[in-house]
Picture 1 (tube, helix red, strand yellow):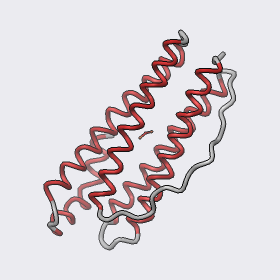
Picture 2 (cartoon, rainbow, N blue to C red):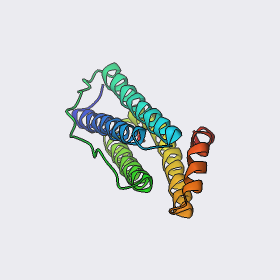
Picture 3 (cartoon, helix red, strand yellow):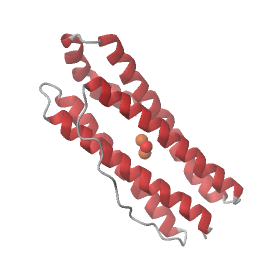
Amino acid sequence: MLSKTVQAALNEQIRIEAESSQVYLAMASWAEIQPGINNVTEFFYKHSDEERMHMLKLIHFVNERGGFATVPALPQPPLTFPSIKHAFAALLKHEIFVSESINNCIDIALAEKDYATHNFLQWYVAEQIEEEALARTMNDKLELIGDDKSGLYLFDKDILTISIAGA
Ligand code: FEO
């Protein structure tokens, strides 16, 4: 049985994963109307789907442990970006925020001696290591590319391979 404190922390994490999905969905829609970055677009759509999966996994866990997972209201995410580089910088910043939030959930689970939740959250710890590393790789590549259009062409060509290798 989940304590009320752990339940509240996990419901907040459900909100954050839902918000992540929404934020990346907005990035995908913006990318889709930019010329020539079809794979970047697909990357954001897929990433949005993954965040929804993270949210669902939490919802099932909370409900299976005798709690009640609440589906949150979400704010309007940013809709446009000055450049692809800005979008990926926002993605990295967001993933760092998600990692901190997962760590906070773990602190709460340990304080409540809820070892089942602690164990469950280890999957998210591993996932965040990968997602942050992937986001850093993307940002490093975009930094190297700068304003070079042929570099951006290659970035778009490679992005799905990079993300599969990093997944
Ligand atoms: Fe589910 Fe990328 O945080």
